[in-house]
Image 1 (spheres, rainbow, N blue to C red):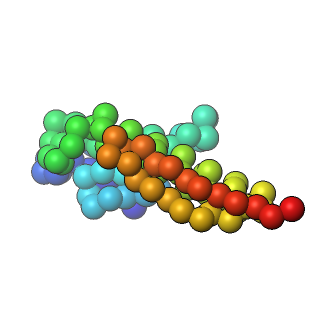
Image 2 (cartoon, rainbow, N blue to C red):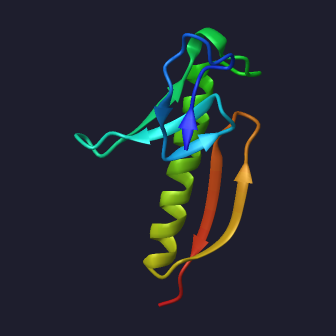
Length: 96
């Protein structure tokens, strides 16, 4: 997938493994194995800041990782609550 600036004129176009439209994406850094945000910050026209966007992505990644590992360890996810402060509470059980 290719991601470029909103207007595409004079903006670098890069390959991205994951794209959100044509203005935001993530590419894998082969040196570190980490995904990097690819976006044109000059044309960023989202309802939240870049920092808040990255925080939300990191939170969702953490939640999915915990859920996957929890299930792999034999637990059952009983409840997931999103709190007013933005935190997420998971209730898990396991019978032994």
